[in-house]
Length: 212
Image (tube, rainbow, N blue to C red):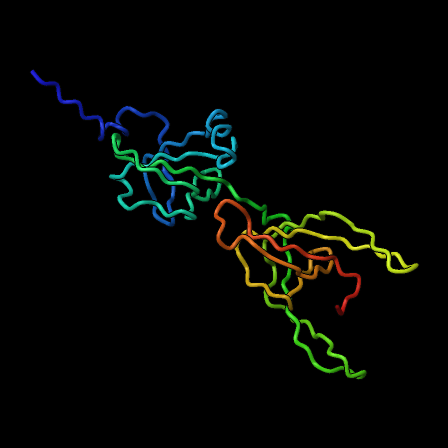
């Protein structure tokens, strides 16, 4: 007598604490959430963090493979999908996710993005006129370091800041960022367009000249 072992469809029947989540806008019932273990985080070589979360999603509930960089929303917020693994034996998707979150309810985490247009001024030099491109953008500003520069007998300071955005923005070298406190940040560089596991980030110089 041959015993047929088929547990592929038993996931929902034998698993406790299943929850409803949203996967890229689609409501999916009966998902299992588990934390990434410390052992898995340590053995991943930095790919996973102990604060990451794993969602197990039955293929019968969500047939298409979840997208890398997509979002899973549960009662604790928004999670970005970093890795998707197909677990054939149990017919479910294993999604390793990370919560990239900036508290938009905090007024300090709101900035304005401006862009310059240039025209000749009274002296013949090109002078910028600044206009708002986006306002009330969710971002967190962090001062990184202050450098002291000496030119002949003069000493000047240069403060560098990082601006972490909740979503990618369009920036260029004619852009600047105004914080909620009025600090002016001249954009030096930006990155994070293709990285799903980190914020879109702008590196800036704190400007001491309002018109610069």
